[in-house]
Length: 293
Image (cartoon, rainbow, N blue to C red; front, side):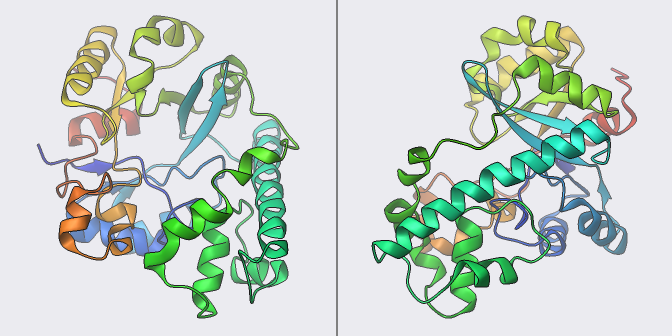
């Protein structure tokens, strides 16, 4: 099955590789006709996405992927809400500060132990001007720009300097509980779906009772059996049906992190073109908020 819309992607405004404009061009070249950038806990990519989609004649929809631990982890995509709604604006600002604070502390530790050399935090901020949510990717991209590292060495660098270190520092703000997050998305004018729901298909009745109105079905993290089950649940319960490539596929941006095509095709980042996303029919339902099936 080849899909019309890719509704789960990440840009340089969170932990993606491509700028919103670059991502639009890559998505169009791959064959998608609609796109959402669902960066982690931040909405700052949308103005550039919307402008680029108009120029490239792609449809788009606003989205953010929120993290929840309540007590198990969920990722919730909020679609079509107002990021300037006061309570939402405050929460997004807190989430940006949470992530950036953690990144700065890991950066400082890596500098002190020699894992990061030749760059200051101020240079990282300048390189990523206009991006409030900063993670290890932003540090590495700034280092690439200075000629200090190469893209193919990213995974080793990340594991040495950030993977375990992130858990050493308590967050300055907590994620909202699931029910509160869903209510905030609704209050800001949007609606909430479950991202890559392979770990929570047994929870769907409870999630629906909290206000979830859709789920990602066609996502690379789901097995074929899970996709079939997720689709069946969505159809039976009248839920929106979404999907997207996330960090996999051409839009994921990590293909050039592998030394050969053979190594790439063995990796979890590789998927066939247009093999994740959602159909034109299901995208129209999400866009119009009307289920017509």
